[in-house]
Image (cartoon, rainbow, N blue to C red; front, side, top):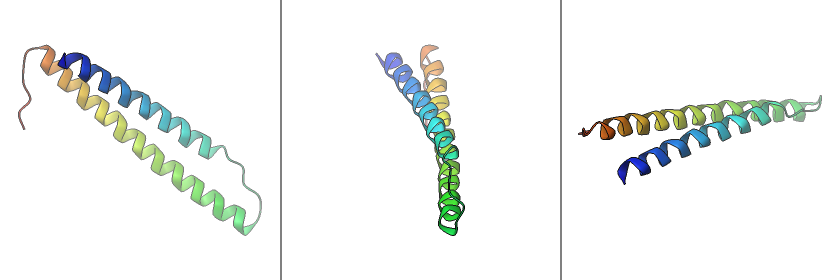
Amino acid sequence: MITDELARNRDQWLRRGDLLRSVAQCCRQIDSWDSPAGHLFEDRVTSSATSIDRLAECADELAEAYDLHLQVVSAGGRIQL
């Protein structure tokens, strides 16, 4: 049924967002060493964490879109693009 598929997709995107936030948090917890290479490494990891956070936000937005679509379908409506 379409509502089951929409709910499953919404839940999967919510889980992906949570996983991505967890990965970003792990990146922020990595200790670097006090050297030029260590500082470069820290900059790259921090930049990666920021990018991963953005991906998590996109996953949240996709989950929200699936949720809205699910609400419309559940009410017997249709989304037309």
